[in-house]
Image 1: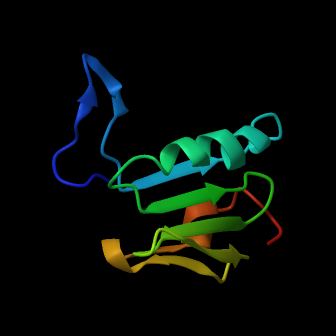
Image 2: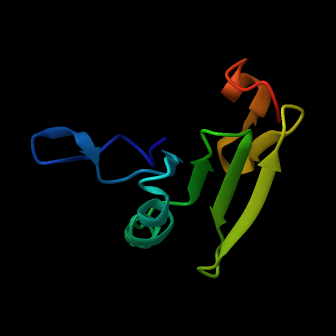
Amino acid sequence: MFCGDPQFASDQRDVVLNPLLIVEVLSPSTEGHDRGKNFEMYRTIPNFREYLIVHQDRRRVEHYSGQDDGSWLLREHVGAGDSVAIPRLNVRIPLADLYGSALDVG
C-alpha cells in the first residue's frame, strides 16, 4: 500500500519510497534484523504507518500501527480464527486466509 502514487528510487522499480504498509515474513536467519534495523529504518519513512510481521512457522502476525504522537501500538493476532484489522486502510485479513492450509496447527 502506498500514500498516493508509488514513488520509486531512481530507475529501480522494486524500491518504493512512500509505503504506507510494509509486510515482513520472518525467517529464523533474518528475524533479528527485521525486528531491529529494518523496522528502525522503516520508521524514518514519512508516510509509513502500518507494519506487519508474519511468522512462517505458526499462525501469528504482529501488527505495529504508527500513532499520531510518534509511538507505535502493537497488536498480536494468533490462530486461524483471528484476523488483522487495519482501519486506516479499511482492511481486515483473516489469518485463515493468510495462511490457508499451510499450517495444521494455530
